[in-house]
Image (cartoon, rainbow, N blue to C red):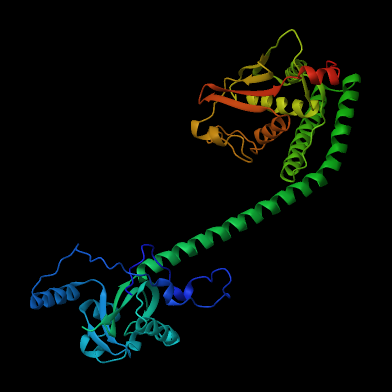
Length: 435
């Protein structure tokens, strides 16, 4: 029976992984590369009909081929060696003819030669078998070989022909890609470990700072209230006390934010759900911001009726305060900040608009990522850690809501959070009381 070339490429035998049920490390037999040939002739290339011309035609093909074409006897003695074989293996035809094919086979692969020759004696053809051979200089070469039996006029197998293609460059490229991927994976693991260590440090540091800061803030606020009631305090001293209280409060908010980030990473950020009026909450946040305004105005537009939702009042207040403070901070020249509470279908929405520096289009897709800051804030010398909007997004998501942003660089931004209105069935189960 004849054997045909398989359509799918084959992997190198000596490195191919073992199939299911085969012991790991056991080499597969080259018979895996042998397939029956069709008895139909291939007339895509038609040799001359004259035997002498056909012989010359075939010799010309062999001589001009870019692949090494070698023939050998069944005991492995080389009987033909074309120019490409000399170029790939380094031996001249004079050096190779009559020598054993083991001349170019690594010593550790002699069993491969024995196995292949046995398959050839049985009439099999080995197709696209990736293996290694040895150059005259001693360096190893990666080759893809196709080995076919040679028969005499009576059909008796008397030798074998080998067509070999040098695939060393391709293999080197594959190894370089594999090494690059390995280095990339190692770098990614190292970066992930660094992020974990950073998060652990921030969590520990925030907890350690929380206790003394709480005491400092409490005493600063107490001293501020006493100074306001006392008549003997100079205005300059009173301003200094206010600065201590304000900055202590700012630092306390920063630490609370860092603790919340740590909770998010650990999956421990939770909310305490209760009925509340989102419109009333927006009014309170706007009112709380008024005493701190110098260059800005904060305006509120809200409906007369309530906007009932089920949510965590403290967390939502934290989110709205963050949006208002961002609007003030990123409007360094002052201007109006507009807060609007409105209903949209089954959702209660609050939007915060400013007339500030705006956000570049390339920064918008990344704006809610942790530690991300828009590309135009550094040139404006606006400080920040890039975690406020990340925290807002997480708080809103825990409430089953969403947050969107629209912005034009140089003209301002509008952030809109949307939360589900308290549905009728929830209102009946949990009576609503305005906050």
